[in-house]
Length: 182
Image (cartoon, rainbow, N blue to C red; front, side):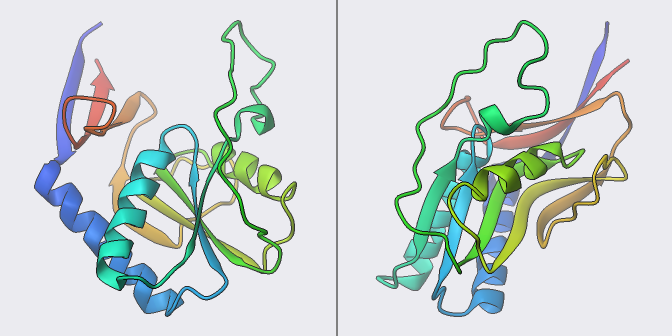
């Protein structure tokens, strides 16, 4: 099977997009009082860590809550197939009760991962509000009525396309590409 790849964000464009997302967060959330940023395991944590680090450099010593959420056991495909799902380390060491939560993931496709994250969050308390930040919004492909509040880039994709996000932390380079099976 032939595959065609098209890069939609390279390193510099990705840095600019992350900067823009950080400034959008600052504009909408103000001083981050009672706000928590939570990256979704496994792939959303690379984006959330970048956003956390960039916000810290912009805001200086202004503190904000940050965590990482493992949704492995909340997924609706958890017991399907032969793939063994291993939990990641959970990193939420604060109370989310009454806080505004910004969930962070790399790609929004069907919305099922976000639903799983919402289910997982309820085990930690009841936030006052949950917003969604994604690097890539694959429009027109939802199985669930979930839409992002903060979007790095929106792309129109076909069902045989795959959006591949590479981070230098787990790959050779930073890039976002659309891979199409021919």
